[in-house]
Length: 242
Length: 242
Image (cartoon, rainbow over all chains, first blue to last red; front, side, top):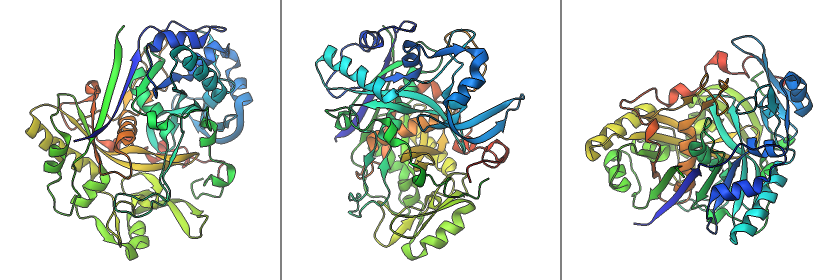
């Protein structure tokens, strides 16, 4: 009996990250020995911290406005106040443009990395230099869903890994061509890594082993390519929902 | 250095499932020896097949209508024709109400299981009886996302496993109470399992080891509880998107 298997673990030992830190060196130290085809998953929070993306909490609403490309919905919160569901400058639709108040220093909030695909590419280069083997890198964030409770992690940056597995036209197990199947590989790996990294632990890094068939020998398309363009977005085409 | 770790594998050896088959017996045979706290993830497709949910392909459009509670959006397909994005009777918003044409016998399409939480509960009972240890069960389906390319697997049925991990009010790594964090555990485990089950293989079952802290000693709330109620759904409250 053959089995397809994946393993994922989140090592302890990442220190608190501060602006200007050499994130690659910290991730390399935390990740431990890597094998060819491993995928290293890093929470965007520590990427942002290394990039100095903290702003003072009083500037939170203005920061959300600055990071916003368009407002998708505004929701009243049970305790009062409004949550803006927006498309941010990375093309990601979510609450508060990714401006984050958890796991940051008191009195501050954290913006998303400037260019998470570029951050992933830099990390990949450093990890390959340190380990001597080809690996992929994902930078992840936590995102709500419109019709389901809770959040899942998604990939907002990617390097050296396929972000989708486009099976359209490939035969299914019955030999019939699959019509619509595009597996959101990078987002599914991000979700997997979230299960071990956790939210309240100092484990912002995970290593995924067993997904080497998705690891590329170049930076590849990046996570930005997962964003639906305007004419692919069913809700811009008209919805009965509003 | 301690590590949080998860493993997931998808055994070969599931036969083609037909209406009336004893699905529990087939899953037990495929899953192999289970340990306490394992989560067994089963694609809804084989649950539907065992339940005899096939209909002839000519009835597809009517089947979608029958499974639909409300139409959320209608999209023109590049090759002509319309895709209906709908809320189905399970509360899941997706294309074609989950009516599926891949990996089914020619000339047929497949409806979702009648009650996936009940299917999961029956499987859980059978798996516990066979293995003698507490395990969780998820029944999964593949779902698109409005603003991102590709699909991820989600849990449409659950038994013996927490479907969300509500961390609101818990302290983060800096001791600040988390305001909004609810981890969509069951959906993230479903995505993990999709990475090893694949779409074109005969591997509709996966075993997840390392998530025992989410395994319950009763059926628990089920996947239906993940669906946002009407007044939680930001798009029913008014959106600028349409």
